[in-house]
Length: 401
Picture 1 (spheres, rainbow, N blue to C red):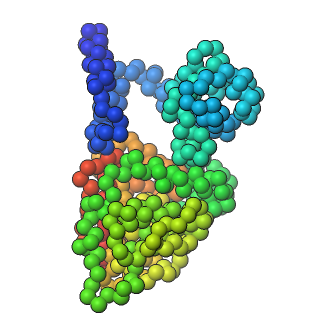
Picture 2: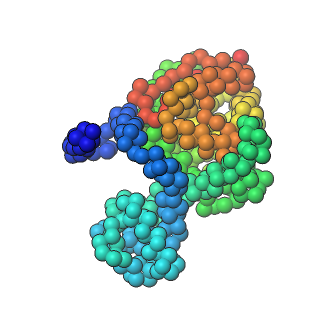
Picture 3: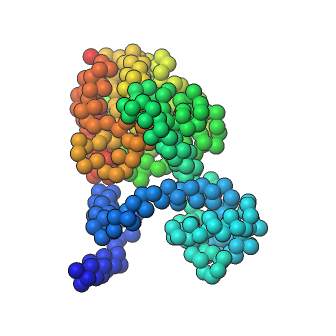
């Protein structure tokens, strides 16, 4: 047995030396390798270590959030790549006292963000500098730290209702955790820092797992072609809940459709857009539960929007879309669907976040088809990306009936 373990260790180390740079590995291969490594880890890890790793899973996130608040990453970013700082030097540049600083640096070093070059002397690993103020990873940490609090209340919330599935977006663990009657999105509108963090997550984090863009595997030019004598001012596509417009901008840049595009999201999100979106894109502050102001567009597009809402509110939002559609309008729902069995950890974790924050869920194909049918739509086809990453990047093309 010892020889077998040694052989596996040697093989893993040899493979590591030959591994391509991470940005050259296709998503499907990357996630397959990660899955294999996790299975290998599970095969050799003693049960008590598994239990402790589960118990300690949130600690790095908490330490990162504290470090961001203290200004630790900003201090190293200002010192420059490769700089070494003593605890005293670092304490002079950050908030808090030296004792707290040293304790936080221990956990950050244990998680390989810093190297302890001597007692109370630290050097940042390159990735650590990505957590400096304004960098997307720092905003991701802020957002998920906020989510962590709601997640911690999920058991208490479910126990009080005898572990039955919630059905209303205004009755969630989030409201219990933050003692607010507001929906999470409404609450974000009252907190500029959290709103900005959320917007940044929506703009950046999904890119790591989304694989191909919807317009790469959906023949939009053919399916959304202008009809004879069509009004030149007709909107080609309305991106409902499209955040700060990153999807529309990529579509515009990659495909140059030459037709009008409209971005819609809550006013607090639209206000966070740093500058013009580009020619042909109009931004509108709008709640998808209000009457749709853009009538008769060729397509209404929603990307990872409805997974934030339980069926009750999802049906209400879809009703507003259906009311605005012309006879030849198309609804495009772009979501990561989950399989009936063997759901990847990433998607199962997102499902728990949906429960904790919105009393919603990640849906299977059957659940999406049922939702759209109940909303008065017929699904024409389900389009899928060829090179899947985590989850199944599906585009439901539907028409009103």
